[in-house]
Length: 589
Image (cartoon, rainbow, N blue to C red):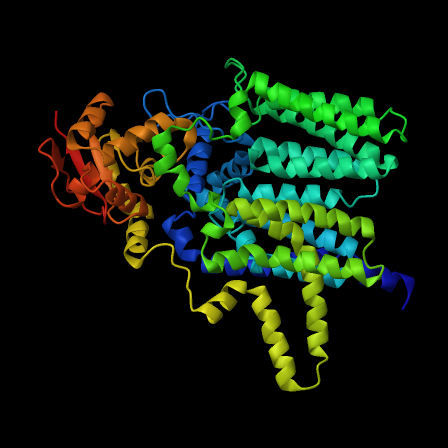
């Protein structure tokens, strides 16, 4: 083989991955065609993200992400980064003059998540190509859409921040294997800075990267500049992204759920301390360890003095009633042992395979991966995997960064299975490998347990409440303040011109408490809150999970009265064609 042919054979297969992405995208569009046509969003966060983009394109300030159609008249404070709005708004802005606003929004709902999928597939494939070979890179891109935790965050209609978190996670992870310390540190720090601006969920992973680089430094002083550059880039990037997204005209406030001045102070102090430590005599290990300890103590001192409420988490100040009825029931925030067996299998499989593969590579003596790369991958995968065991929604990150190593191992199994001469044994081996790829089906086959988070009645009711063609009928009523459950409210403001009290977003927790107290309290309590807020309509959709919680916890409450047909005299039923399962009453004064 000529040198040119060899280079082409070993070149990064970007065209092949692009073709794989195109085929996967077509399949995802076909699978989700009904949801796309019906405007059925995976989550209320995606729906509210589109509303936020609409408000921005309609003239709301870049620096103002308040949702003014919640908690009127002051509105509901949101903590979402404007940066996530950019690709959505760009697609709508470009396409609206050609296709109209309605179609432009649908195009954005499809193309933006698929664009994030392309970025993720290319970056993960490139890392697999760098560490292994061309075939593993292609196989990695093939396996990413098979992983349920990953593809759930990258499918059409999933326009909230989760897909871009994945892209930034694989960017930072890939940088950890870069031999150029300066480039590695800068890419890691900037990727983490943007990730933290988008969502503070990345903070534990950011800490894991810094801990890894500190450990490298402690073992090998020649590796010290990787951490110094990473911390400097994290600090500079965080300051920049904060400056271009924060509401500068509002007095400086320290929030626990978004990058705030207290976090910037911690990053800056850490960057200064590490820069000073880099000038120590490299052989003074105890001085270095003491310096790391002082840096950590300094960070704790800043947080406890400037924002002690953040020391116990972003939700430490959440209203107790809201915590009980809402936060403690969000399944994606629960640990792995609170999930169904099928979800547990999906969460555990890819990271477990990757860690097993790394263990085998470490002990094999082969030079496929250097020991430094094996230990780097193991440290970061274990960190992300541990987080996913505590918080289910983190499982996509763990699965993604583990994928190149899992893909390498599974591909080796396939090559060995292909060489088995006896057909029954070859078929059994191939079947076992297939079950590794789709672990949920394996659990179903073994245990007979199916995924059933909700019953059929709830699913049918949820579909009625999500479909905009049902809630569009509310537009025939004059713009009013509507009291609706947390899960129904976002669909109401999406499909009509009405205002609601709250959705499931924690900065508006006092308004959330009013909704919970209304539907779980007595008729008298409900009337008092509705009167105080000037509510003109009460609406809900029977059978949704939230209503079932209210019924179970408050069998004598206001929600049960409405569901049982015992609405009080101060409510008058409203009949409108096209409402489907939605029930609505006008408040009589």
